[in-house]
Length: 286
Image (cartoon, rainbow, N blue to C red; front, side):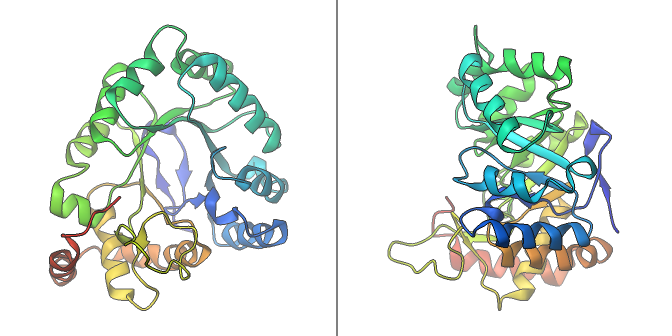
């Protein structure tokens, strides 16, 4: 089964990760089926957060038979150490583990939030301490703000960064270009979210096809655009793809990622994305 190096972590990972939102709200038996399906196909990196409703509970139960054979990543959205510690301890308990392979500062949205996390009594004090103890074996960040990500990276040699690397925003707005350059120069593991996303949801638009996705993915019948979007993000340097939260998007990427790696982005696929960008560029992305 195909695996890739995740930056300087030393981890060899399947190139599509299991985002915890896949397990969210569908019930324990469905989560168990999703996880078993993923394991059978070589998926070995699982990412979750306390903010994903019941995902920690469901994923924790589903991973019990597999925990020692997979990488488990979790997050804290707290910015102060005492609050982050409480959240981390609860996640360890809920996920039935005594360590995280990656623990991340979650959703850094501004330079001010970075400054808070790195300030006196900030969450970084906890993350560094937990890494020294082996409870957080690697530490990373997740961001939607490139400015915040670059500031955080300038202050600490993080192991990983999770960011919305996306054909629309990268091709149309250069989003992520400087971050990718910096992350690669530091040998960070780069994880991409939202690579199948087309644009933001429009007011009143039905979300029935993708009820767990915070932005609108390409539809199930837009296979060529989906494949091109995956290849685009891989071509700019992503190590791992984390699909939108619905199982259908996840399973599509798992089943097609090997082809995307073996047959890289073509000029025709780039042209397809550029043509589609003209159709959606007037719409917001987030």
